Length: 174
Image 1: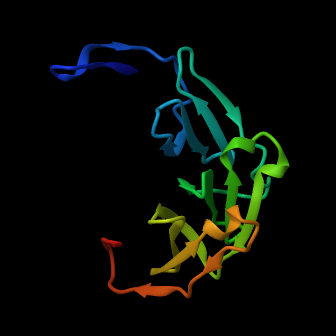
Image 2 (image 1 turned 90 degrees about the vertical axis):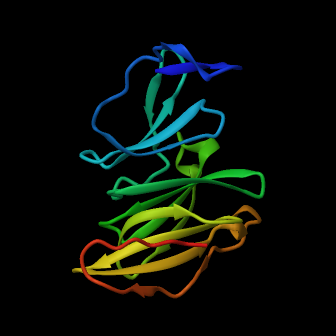
Image 3 (image 1 turned 135 degrees about the vertical axis):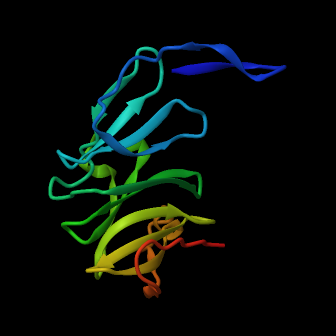
């Protein structure tokens, strides 16, 4: 549901239904203007594009390789281009997709091989994403600069760093 803007209270009291989307979607990321969202159908290993307008529509993003099994995604803007960084456990890869070309295989801009299975992707400044990977109970953090992709250059992959500790860990990035 969506709420209209209210100059006095911020949000209006009445919600407008935008329709329904499958309940099985995870890893939700939305555009700042609220028109489009991206989510993962974890069971099928498919990236979905969700139009957030009444009625909402859900389509498959075929730019993601069929071998991918994504647990996480991130949306970012760099160099005037909107990108999606999609992690894949089974491929131990970070797939970088052009958000404006998700319905064709040409939307796959880069496949970045990782040493370990990725579990989470977070957006940093200026086209950088941070990938949390795991090996058993050990966690690692790796930065990837995706900004060069917009200029047709390869992404820059930093060396991974171990995240110390056991059990639940909170990682803050500046």
